[in-house]
Length: 262
Image (cartoon, one colour):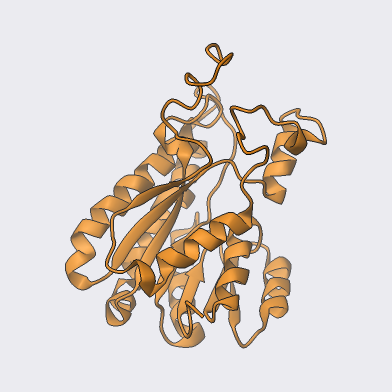
């Protein structure tokens, strides 16, 4: 098993990609600290995966005090930590005109400030274990879309955080890498697109330019990729930002026939 005896904190891990990572990591021998705002859902997942192999910590990453509590609780849960996966993120829609200061600050607090502060709080422990950080970003960091400027900016900042800290923490043998995830079919994404006006069968009627394979990525696809990056197999690589997507981000539309105006 590739993660035998590793202790890993995954933020935002009660649903979607985070939950898939928790399940995959446990199957690979890790002990996982599950985190989220929904206590009932978090405890249910912990019980399902095995309470000897998991612990659940509740917390709102928009609150700096709760970020500090999460870091302290994670260290208490199993006495050490080998990897931090910064997965939690808000994906709330808002155009430039609709984005006020409160909305922008909340997005940045959860998606960018919290990962930074968690790394800061857990760094002494990660130095002791020569551990690693895996940030879960998005291909939207490269540009984004009209109704997600604040989200896209937060993920762009996460790329800089990853590369900056990889450089500065290299001598401490703490690695920092990032997965920029493409369009993934989670339960939350399905419901969001329904609210955006797409039909109930939208995952089966995707345009070729959006899903050349005929389907979206799954949380399990991302979880499988994440195993490599939190395991010793990827040592000593640090500072990598990898696109987990089914097409090249650059040129994906202009190189598709009939999509020149897309």
